[in-house]
Amino acid sequence: MFTLAEKQHLLKLLKQKKRWGWLNKQKAEEMDAILIEKLEQMIRNELVNQKHL
Image 1 (cartoon, rainbow, N blue to C red):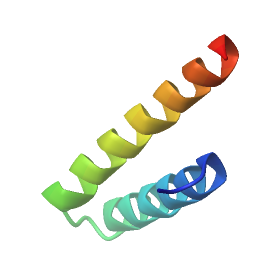
Image 2 (cartoon, one colour):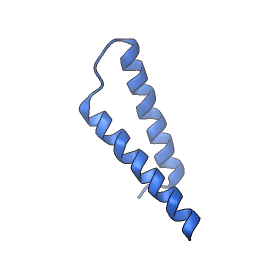
Image 3 (cartoon, rainbow, N blue to C red):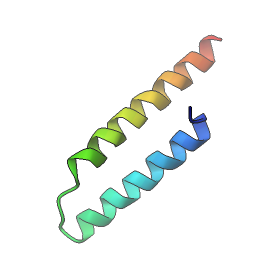
Image 4 (cartoon, rainbow, N blue to C red):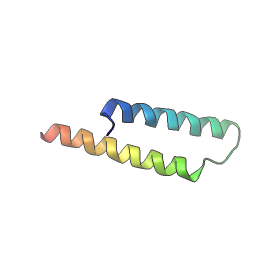
């Protein structure tokens, strides 16, 4: 299991990679998009759960 900080760092790295692909006019890989979406959801869930605990 990753900590919140680790998840946020991974998300940041994936988004930077995606941005780099835009600069090179390359289509972002589908797997990267799926991982970004899942990481964002995991981070949101963890932040909401922290407030309620």
